[in-house]
Length: 363
View 1 (tube, helix red, strand yellow):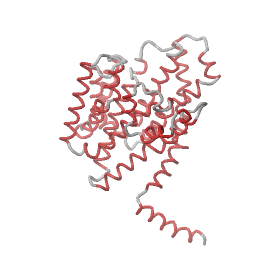
View 2 (cartoon, rainbow, N blue to C red; view 1 turned 90 degrees about the horizontal axis):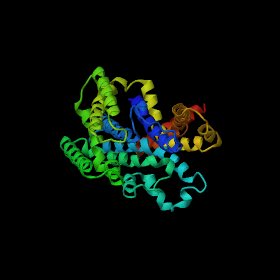
View 3 (tube, rainbow, N blue to C red; view 1 turned 30 degrees about the horizontal axis):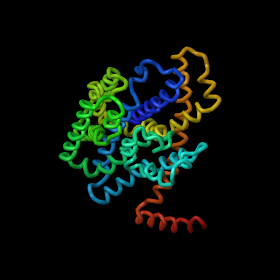
View 4 (cartoon, rainbow, N blue to C red; view 1 turned 135 degrees about the vertical axis):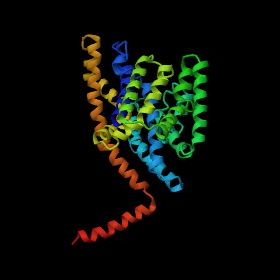
């Protein structure tokens, strides 16, 4: 599962690299099949399916369906999102001349910091220039994640409510696909509008609850998802092949997760996913906004080879940057955030244990 999540993060990173570097300098390849036709939009949709599956799994296996369990779930989600998001947001908002923060009021930082509802703000202000610092513009998707986390304990534990909301979300999406012409409004209603993307979160949840397949069948379904993605137009996430890919992808997750959840390499790859998701645009700005990056772009090479070479340089910088961010920023920040937000009873137990240990260490 970790490898799948990392691949999806790489697909999002590639999409932004494609737009800001390859397309900007006339090096964009004509076909996306070499990256399995995995556009950034499709990768985000698949991330929503993965999120629905994982949140469904932890609610079913880790958190009791009572007040204490729900509070523990919300705290764990906050520990997952904010300890890395806040340092990255702070860097993005204050770096550069002029900085994003110097161009906005102090109150402008509140929606990006809280995240809840930021996807709605971005949607209604599309293309939403200035709502987020440009290098962390992908943060709007975290707003959709946070909204889903808020609903999850109340929705996912009720099959009836899940099916009602899935049907309503599907109707919203089908109506948009059927009646809204391609353009800004189409993007708004199919990509940014949470009621039309909720169905993908719930697709992951329903797969976790009802699909029980072995590893071989699950791998075959994942292969079918790849094939269906390749058959779809690269710009579409709503064509018949896209929906087929989403269904196959969701159905494949339970078996693949069961086979890899205790694999150290898979988990290590998963650890790099979130940092890569957040810092890849910063890496693009740093690497290709310098004299070295400009020199690489100015090389007179065969266009396809040039594009592959630049992508290799980008990934060779982005993946280590993500790993360093995980170990040097995310893990310490998560530990500090966890210590500060630990339930009072646990903090008191830790303090008592510390008082008992320190004197003995002095002897």
